Length: 177
Image (cartoon, rainbow, N blue to C red; front, side, top):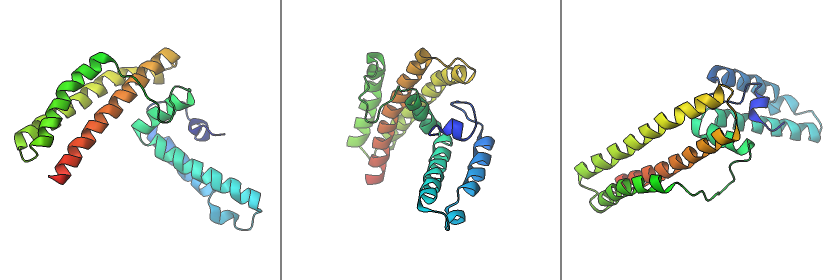
C-alpha cells in the first residue's frame, strides 16, 4: 500500500480531516516504531523502516495543502516530477504587471513604497488564487472526482508555483537589501 489516504483510512480529499490524520499518524508511529523490532529479522526491520518512513511522509504531505494538492494530482497520473507546464497566456499577461513591480523593487531595494506595492500585488494574487481554487477543491471533496476537474486544479497548482517563485524573488531581495 503506497497511497497515503488508504494508509490513513481516510477519503481522498484536498482538505483531509486534520484530527484523523494526526490520530492515525500517532497510531502508526507506535505500531511501526523501529525500537519495537530490534530483535526481528532483517526483512521485518526493513519493512518496519519503510512503513515508518511512509507514515512520516504521509503526515507531512497531508498536513500541507500544497503538498496534498500535488499528491492528489500525482496519484491520478496528472503531475510528473519536473513537469514543464504551459500556463495560460491570460495568466502570464496578468503576471507581467506583477513582474514589472518586482523588477522595479529589485532595482530600487531601499524604496519602501515599491516594496509595499510589490508585496500587496502579490498578496492580491494569492487571495485571488484562493478564491478561485476553493470551489474546485470543494467540488472534488464532495464526490465530483473527475479528470476534468483535476485538470483545472492542476492549472491552479502551477499558477501558485509561479506566484511562489515571485514571492521567493521578493524575499531574496529583502534579505539582500
